[in-house]
Length: 174
Image (tube, rainbow, N blue to C red; front, side):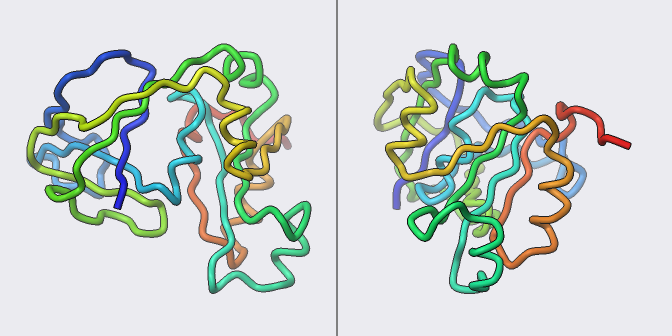
């Protein structure tokens, strides 16, 4: 299994466990976070870019696929807001690959894995064209004025989903 960490920071030589700020995690246990290959495209955006991501799996209904996917070829969507388009076009991401042996699953659906030990990347590469990389991976990219309607609808669907950095999203429209 391939595990990655995506960053806007170049040349990180060691990842040390950091105490989490999330309320659902033990605040005394430091973690190094990684993402699996299936959900890797969800992180091909600038770090603070709010996004709604979803993909079809064995539980996804044909009705939801017809309603939310643009074609039978697409199975995975990353949606961002208009204001992030230019930022994303001009962002370079640095990808760090880890040996997966020290990691354990934190959230299979979101592709999250964690390690409680410091990690040295086994490989690093950069991505300069985020949209091109998403397209190459057959990811449908949507650019919306506001993410909240899509977020609400996808959470009621049969898709596997992840909403990232929604605290930076535009406010809900009235």
